[in-house]
Structures are given as C-alpha cells and as structure tokens.
Length: 638
Ligand code: WTA
Image 1: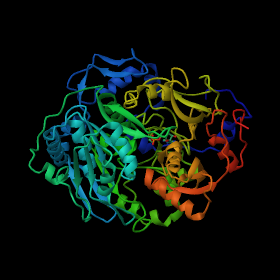
Image 2: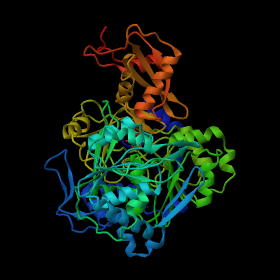
Image 3: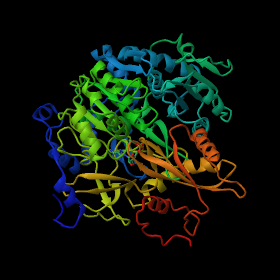
C-alpha cells in the first residue's frame, strides 16, 4: 500500500468490497514467472536490461549496438544497428526444429469448414507467396493492403509481406468500400489481397465487390489477389485480378528472408482518434517482435504446447499481436475462427473449446456479456477442463461479467488476464501475470519494464483513489514509431498533452495496492463491441448525406456492447425529419464506415452545444442524456 488512509476516497469503499482472487498452488508452481513482485522491482530498476534480456530469446541476423536511442525523442529507436525479421522469428526459425511438424494454424468457420497448417506447411506457402510478390515487383518498403476475413490466408499474406520487407496494411473486412479506399490511398498500396466472399451470421458478404468499388478511387493498386473462399460467382478482370491459388501455383517453396533493420516498418494499422481521418499506426520489426513475444509468453504463461484461441479479428491489433505474430513466434497452435460465437446455437464458443481442447481463451468483455445473456446452461454442457488461463481485452470489464467468466468458464481455477493496451502500444502494457492476485475489474499493474502513472493536467501524479489521465513514463520496444505520413500528428497526439509522457487517452485511477482501474476514454473515442470508432468519423459520415447540416455522436452505455451510438442531427433548412430519413441516415453511416458502426438512436435537434470556437461539446450532450452534471461548461457558447 502506497498511500495513507483517506476515509473519504473511492478506493476505501472499493477495497472493502473487493475480493482478492489468488492463483492456485498449481498455477504458481507451473508459472514462467513465480516471483511477481521481485521481477517487477528488478525490471523497474533497469528496464533496458529487462528488454535486452527479452530480445536475446529471439533470433537476430546481426546484434544491436544500442538497446535504445533517445536522441530524437519522442521518435525512439530500439535495438539500433540490429538486423532481423519479424516473419523469420514467427516462422523460419521453427522449421529448423521439431516445431516444424506441429500445427501452427487451426481454422474453422461458421459453416463448419475446417483446415489446418503445420509450421512447415505454413512456411512453404508463405514462401510461395513471398516469391510471387517479388515476381510482381514488390520490394522492401512497398505497401500491401489486405482486406480479408479471418482465414489462414490473411496470416499468410501478412507473413509473406513481412518476409520480403514490405509493409502490410490490414483493413478489417467489416469496413466499407469508402473506408477501405481511404486507407489504401493513404498508404499508397501497390497490391490488394481480398476474397471472393465470406459469411457473417449465415449471410454472404461479397468482399470482392466492395474491393472493386474501393479501387475505383485507388490508382496505386496494380494487382488484386483474390482468395477463393465462397461459392460467390465473381468476375475477375484479367488485367488486374488473379486468384490467390493461381498467383502462388508455380512458385518455389523456399524464399530468402529480407534482412531488415530493426527499425524498418513491418506494418501500418489504421486506428480511430479524435479527427475524421484515421491514423496509420506504424510498427517496426525489432521492437515489436520483442514486446509481443515477451508479453505472450509471460502473460499467458506459454510452455510451447498450447492451443491458443484469441477471438479477435486479425484486422485489429489484438489479432495482429495475439492471433498471428505472438502465437507463431512462441511456436504454439493458434486457432482462427471465422464466425460469430452463437451460431447455429449459443454453445458454439464452448463447443469449439471442447473440440480443439483450447488451453487459453483470450476474448473481449462484449462477448462475455453476450454469452452471459444466454445463461450458464450452455457452457455447463461442455468439457472446458482443457482451459488453463483466460484473457480479456478491449474495454473495461464490469465485475459482474468478470465473475461470470471466472466461475462458469474458468470454473474458479483459471486466472483472468485483463490486459490493457492499444493499437499504439503493440503489446500488453498493464496486465496481471498468472501469479498476480486478481481483483475483478482491475487490470492490475504495469507489465515489468513499464512505468505508468495517473496524473492531472499538469502531469502531477494524483493520489490513490483519484481519477486522472493514464500516462506511460518510459518508452517500450513495441511502441508506435510514428503516424504514417504524418510525424507531426504522432507528436501532437501522444506527446504534447502531458509533457514528456506518452498520453494514452484513457482515464484511470489506482487503488491503495497500486492496482489500476480503467474508466474509459478522455477523448470521446467510442468502443462499440470492442471496436474502436472515432466519433468524428461517424459524424463526417452523417454530414456526407445531402440532407444533413451538422451532426454529433456520443456513446451511451449498453449492457452487451459496452457502448452504442446515439446521434444528434441538425437537418438542412427545409428538410423535414421523419422515420424514413432516420433509416436513410443509418444506411449512410453503414455505407461510409461499415456494419460495425451501428447507430442505435437518432435525434433531430435544432442546436448543438458548442464552444465559442465552434467545437461541438459531446461531453455536454452525453451528460444531459445520462442525467449527469455537465461539469465545466465555461467554454460553452451561449
Ligand atoms: C481500451 C485494443 C479497459 C482503452 C487492444 C484503450 C481497455 C483502447 C482494455 C485501445 C482493458 C483496451 N480494460 N479498457 N483491458 N484494453 N482498452 O487500439 O480505452 O482497439 O485506450 O486496442 O481500448 O483500443 P485498441
């Protein structure tokens, strides 16, 4: 306990009601890290030594001169002078050991189809694709756009891209043509991977059609590689399109791995922020592989034999780090499920765990809450004894959902790793380890080597129990390096708010035991079923409709999705509000952004609360909507 007792504060109340969930003797005896507090202390004393030791566990073509170079901060560089390749560590190195015959990817889809790849098979196919990409003229630094569902081929395309030193930009397959086009244009991608179609909730989704629409605006793409995944009858344009199986057919199964500088970009991943334009978050080969490898091995206590199921989509950072690169670097089996968890029945998720004997389940609060609604009888029907650890990510988990997950899925014996991190951080930053005593709803403490703080506007630490801005005080290897094409935005977004600190955009507090409790975002960024959506992107989608003059959107709490979107719309003069128009506007957002940006409610209004400089105060709308105090409204224009 770090702070003195303060009877009035929030922590006191929580601590009194809080139950501590301690790991069993078995969990402790098998843990990779047993002395939690000792490791934290040691790493805090010398974070660089900690990360250098972590880096030694991977293979490098050439060692580093310096662990970190801070001379151009906040453009930190890690492992400078080193040569390496992320894909080499995820794949090539395993082919030299008996891991090569292990299953790397297990795949199943909603309709019941399944496939698997051993490490060797995956390695061969990645090499074929790498050769095909090189034959196509792609080289180091070129951008490759990937618009694919959760299929083995998405992993293959990502790995082949990284292997040849190109930079992939995966665009979640739930995004619309316009959103895809915007991302392709920003990255100036030369090639696009997509599929003929996929299924979602039993309905066919024609991805190639969406991609074709997007490409009308994208002049840089010279080749479209199409994975055959459905029975969709599609027409290929021989000038530009090629089936994936034809693209790789005659290619050799060996390919040289590009020797990359540790600081060369491996991928860019677009994420939402406060403006309408998404940010291209850049991650590099060296630091990213070190951070992801160390966290997956420690947080999920990997021994090398696990069946690991992360239910995210590879289109988000969670999928990049913990469906693809993390599990593969660790040489374990990653399960990819393309579908929803409750089809044909609400037991699908439990059935998959039993069928594949999943050891670690890493999912999101929204999914847990959805399963809770169906009741405990569904998980009770299945043998979940293979589970050893559970994980959650993406949004704060309410204690009720945490306890349900712990009791009915983990059967009171599987610790829950509530991992806090971001697209920008690349890896878990605040999370328990399996031996950490847990509190339902808390993300516990910063990972070893990470120094976090909760501060006020001036950057001063606030006492336990007081809310403040969550910041990170020191750099870490897998941190975002820049915003693609926009280094000034990188500096402004992450390093200007609180001087010298990485600004996470989250609000949190610490309790007397130093445990962190995440309370949400400071910047109105929405989390709908775990998907990060910028309010300005949704507003700009509304405003692109010819009948809309102005729009403001807020997130309202929702029992399953975490948040849902409510929009306040000012119509253009002479346009009359109607229910039909609401439907039209909802469709417009869906068309502009994609199906995950579901609008729950629309209210037509005459006025929006604004600052004198004309900025919409979403905070005021939200407080009014929820019947809360509006707080400081001195900036509000009268
Ligand atoms: C939120 C997802 C509470 C947080 C990996 C963060 C969380 C944003 C947690 C990043 C958690 C993520 N508890 N909130 N365990 N994990 N968040 O970029 O607000 O999609 O800033 O990355 O999700 O979302 P992103």
